[in-house]
Image (cartoon, rainbow, N blue to C red; front, top):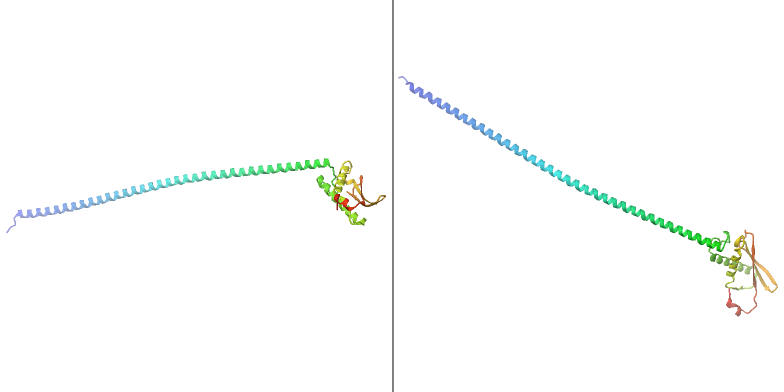
Length: 252
């Protein structure tokens, strides 16, 4: 039995429709995949841009922090330098003041020393003008006049003691308390007119035991190396009065 032609056409049309539907479905799926891929690429691109922006912000913030900290550090360092310079200037000023004070003290001390030396020289010159003594005068040179008198008096006393021990048999020799100082003063007064001063003085010590019986018991030269230019005689006389009348005015 023959197959009708219409039925074949229907089958072919159905198969064609089915194929076209599958192709459309595939195209839709492909488009969806492409759209998803584009969306993913867009999202990834946005994420990358956001990350880059964040990194740039972080870098700029870090740079700002560094610059501000560097500025602060530089400002603090500058303040420290100023303080150090001020301290150094103060120290230098103090050192200069101390040096000036030391120099002033030294100058004052030098002036005082010069004044003292001038006063001593003036005093010595006045003494020498008033009591001209030669340098080799029986260790009396450059001594004040009173000191020279005292030393000369002590030497006279020593000479008298020695003469008494060597030449007199009596147990004691009594002299007025002011006798030897008066003799020393008279020696200096007489020496002012002499060319050799006190060095040219010779003292002869004599003892008179009887009115007409005098003997020399000592000779004292103030300077054995100088020629004698004037002489003094000191005579000890024996007094036969009672001790009670003599004691008050005499000294052992």
